[in-house]
Amino acid sequence: MPKLLLLNGPNLNLLGSREPEKYGHETLADVEVRCQKLASEFGYDVECLQSNIEGELINAIHKAGAEYKTGELAGVVFNPGAYTHTSIALHDAIAGVGVPVVEVHITNVHARESFRHHSYISPVAAGTIIGMGTRGYQLAINYLLEK
Image 1: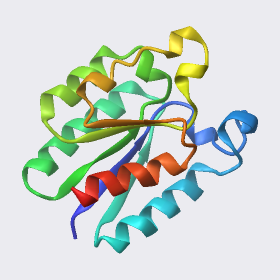
Image 2 (image 1 turned 180 degrees about the horizontal axis):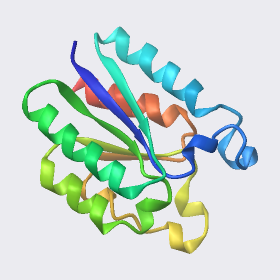
Image 3 (image 1 turned 90 degrees about the vertical axis):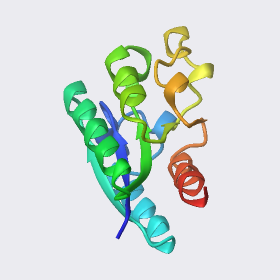
Image 4 (image 1 turned 60 degrees about the vertical axis):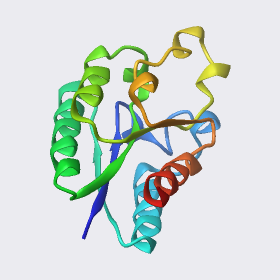
């Protein structure tokens, strides 16, 4: 069965308990279950990975690029967390492998601190969903699988 990669960066393992006034009460496990259910409606599996380590995220993107080329993977839904604003390495990994990536942010980063206004990921992403809460993950899945 073809699949999607749901990739989450630093601190997203704390969803549900970290600043719930900003990020809500849903846990990452809740989000993953909802995404798996939606993808299954399209006949896809979802592989989920969360890491606080930049290199692990880069390795996952490299693997996703190889799987995309063989038709095993339809794309990546990626919430890079704070690495959005700092990681040229993630930018380069996405640019280098050719897999469609939809960047997702739970909060509206443009309504927050100024250092959050710049994304190294957006220029190489197929699309960006910002400020739609955890529903942004579902919107990203719909975009990738309806293409």
